[in-house]
Length: 305
Image 1 (cartoon, helix red, strand yellow):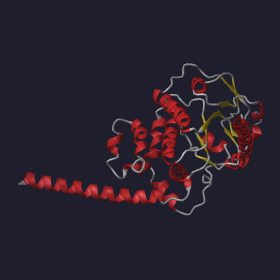
Image 2 (cartoon, helix red, strand yellow):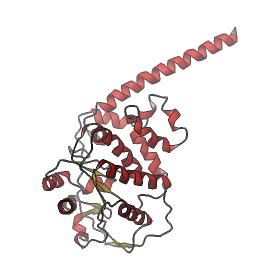
Image 3 (spheres, helix red, strand yellow):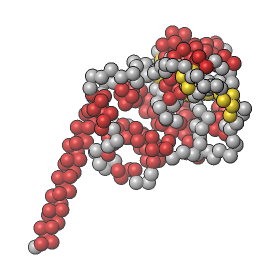
């Protein structure tokens, strides 16, 4: 009799927890997709709403370096900046897959960095930002499940996709004006980098992440398959780089294999002025405008040939 009562109480508690998990999860889902501002909303817009001709992808360097207004005006095509702080090829291959389920962009600009393909566990942790979209976009499961072998089971909870985003969801539902919001995804950096220019030599013992290499190749192949003009770009840094990193070497060779333009601004003489930089790795607003104009001119010339 006691065992029966115990199991009944246990089952009741489990049922209550399931109901609470479902109810709270659905409420958080509503709040999440009700956002109309902030970086999280920009992800939703990129995945589910925008249908621009040109899409920019990459890390914070993409987000801060490419002004869609300038690119759009030059190419006479609509443009959206889907760059996101800290994210790399794993994230952007996932974003590309969701976008291609809705429509095919005419042009994609993929901005890459010196350690794009390096082994870095943090790059997998950052994929949590995609958790809220998995239920609506099952194609993302393959990407987020790379975080760990138990990841698929965590999604049995309706709260789990939002459990690290509570504060940001609340902020996104309040009518605060935030500087990280723009209609076209671009965020201009202000200020001038006052430090002297550094020199760097990249070590060739960098170990490449096999999954990132796989994602890069899938990205290149998918754009080719869909007929999207892809431009892979290494945008300016305020450093004298004495050689190229192993990641960049691989990306350059992969682009050559797929006949995709790789545009390197490494040590570009037009971008050695500190007045164009916010820090050593990011252009400021003036630098971004100059760079965006330069990239647009390159693409315009390439399209004529």
